[in-house]
Image (tube, rainbow, N blue to C red; front, side, top):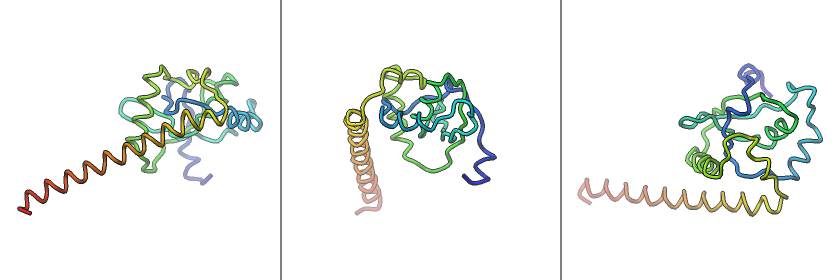
Length: 154
């Protein structure tokens, strides 16, 4: 972790961060729990967050946040994600979560599933959404290019 990032890390309440993921892999959770030290919250790897419209969302680190929840942590170390990611996709994922009643990391307690099921339920759904988003973006670009051509008299 670079020194610049360390200065930007702060603690945030778990119940103030909106998940952007519908499931937790039980295998990944098991791995995280092996190295999780509930006596040293500061040793936990910080979790990236982002303000998306009216919500602060998890960008990554759902499993770490869930492990913290299981150890009765109320806060986790976080930092503001500054990379440009596909925020349209995150918005869709966040909407899925809200629609399914997932508003905090605690709401994932009945959604810890085996890895194979996780891949089907989550990865496949995300792949389809990414494909649909790309198709929509291509249509929009094509439509914009047609409008420009018409305006120029082509």
